[in-house]
Amino acid sequence: MRPMMLALLLVVWVVSSGCGDDGRGNGNLEAGGSCGAGTCTGCCQGSQCQAGTDNSACGAVGFPCVECQSGEVCVQGQCLPYSGKCNPANCSSGCCQGDSCLPGTAKDACGSGGIPCIACAASQTCESQSCGCGPTTCNGCCDQSGVCRSGTDIAACGSGGQACTGCNSGESCILGGCTSSSCNASSCPAGCCSGADCKPGTDPTDCGQGGETCKACKSGESCIQGVCVDTTQCAPGSCPGCCEGSQCLSGFSATACGSGGGPCQVCSGKQLCKSGSCSLDPTSMWGIVIEDADLDSSKSWDTLVYTAPDVFVKLTVGTLSGTTSTINDTYTPQWDEYVFSATASSILQNGLTVEIYDDDWPTSDELIGACSITVPETVLLAGAGYVSSCGSSGWVNKLSFKFTN
Ligand SMILES: [Ca+2]
Ligand SMILES: [Ca+2]
View 1 (cartoon, rainbow, N blue to C red):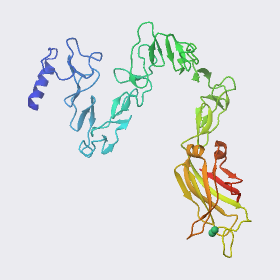
View 2 (tube, helix red, strand yellow; view 1 turned 135 degrees about the vertical axis):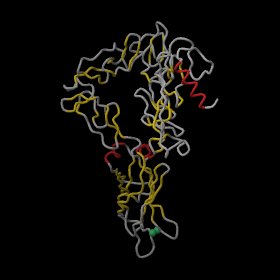
View 3 (tube, helix red, strand yellow; view 1 turned 30 degrees about the horizontal axis):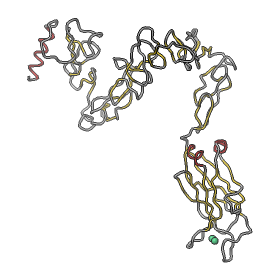
View 4 (cartoon, helix red, strand yellow; view 1 turned 60 degrees about the horizontal axis):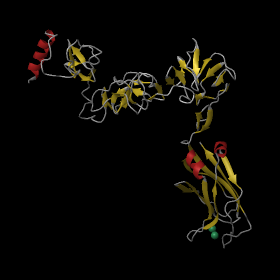
């Protein structure tokens, strides 16, 4: 069918709205009844439900179909402006925001195939470059409209971005699953019970913990760690989070970390706030500096005029390795030299392996001492440490190192 003919037919069709199925079956045709939000996921052309994806009939969730203007294209039921500089030919892997080709994976700029980017609704997420709901970003469950729900209701129960299910009569929704067991302290340890349902217990309308009955906080109160709190009053005992002056905060933020109504702490750049206390961020990077060494001076290392060694240190942490420069003719070398950076988790797990050598180039270097140094979190956070022996040789009296941010 030629486009002209189709357009003409469409006009006739709109004018004669109310007629039945003409057999063209374009989109989610509903049998009988009027077209509307409850019956049509596309757009309504009179009483006909259309897919809502055509430029000539664009729309969604039962709204009347609209015709997109010149320079617009119908994307997921919306007429969106279209730039000539970004298009499906040169932006096939993402979406177009004006002239720019964006990855199309952001909630506020979602799309693929060079279509105009769309901003997903507040309740939706950008899943595989399409606004909807899914495991990547929805912790609750996805309802039929692609909306992410908390997943804690018997009417919409689920978790992990899976489809919501309605529980049977008599069942409870516990931790995102329909179950015949009731909501109590053992089935809902981290939240609160609202009738049969286990809620997270962090919302002022359903606040609670340990499987107790959810309560609604009073006006002006916040729900902090399952407790209704007047956040303008803060004291140990009354605030489960931490006190910033007279204000009670949740205590879960790196800029205000704490628990039990103690003062809020600001965690350092290398720390995270975990369960109300600052702890080392395992992914933080730390520079390792070899500072100096003190070697036993009774041993002669070289045979010429100078008998003191020419000292360098080889440092290994996990799979990383590096060496300092060589300091010639000394039993007390001072490097103060950055060697490389490693993550906190690697340093804590592997420790520092050091090998101290006398440089005898062009012949083989002589090992003065080698050892593995365990680095506890306290030493890493303190930023410096030393060992008073290294290896069984007895030639090393001290080796100092430090950590830089
Ligand atoms: Ca030597
Ligand atoms: Ca030497």
